[in-house]
Image (cartoon, rainbow, N blue to C red; front, side, top):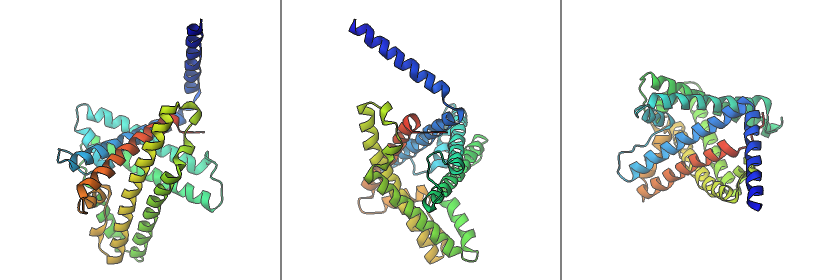
Length: 284
């Protein structure tokens, strides 16, 4: 009797969840798919970096480089096209958050800063989506450091170019420090639907998120430091992308260990994004 009641309850809960998913607006589904795609890219970046740290066939790469790696696999173009759709969905959700403020950030200074950051992130992922489309059509993919150095050189050649690069570096360091704060205070848990997660899922998301977001902060801080150095020295060669930031870790004492820890952290960050894809509060 108890077994029948338990099965009936499980069936009812499953049907309720299916109904909820069917009723969920398509834009929210796209946002969830976007988080999933972003997580997959970071997992791949981290795995390739771990392989590099252990002297295997991996390489230090960026989001675009990870997509290029996907394209070279069997059925890579198909997988890449799916990821491109997901990345476009993530960018679209960032734009919706900036315009409609579904997370209720408000219209004070803090709220406007959040909205501007959403638009910046949207621009980054639109660019990444475009890169995926180009890669599908066999366009080449250089390192992010080379691309950023070219862009940095153009900015430095302009009036107030050094100030702009330095300010950007300070903002990126700020993003890195905010990631540390968010990890330490476990603010990232606030966006998850605790009521829909079992104890194991909640505990896993908590610890993986803390490690992954901290590693993400390390990479951003390194990139920001090199941008400031680029501004102070008026030298675009000092500009580093994600791959350059990871490469810089190898040059430090115990560099292989540092790279391994941060690379595993990026894998953890990607896994945490998979939890966000499933359990993040996304109100249209």
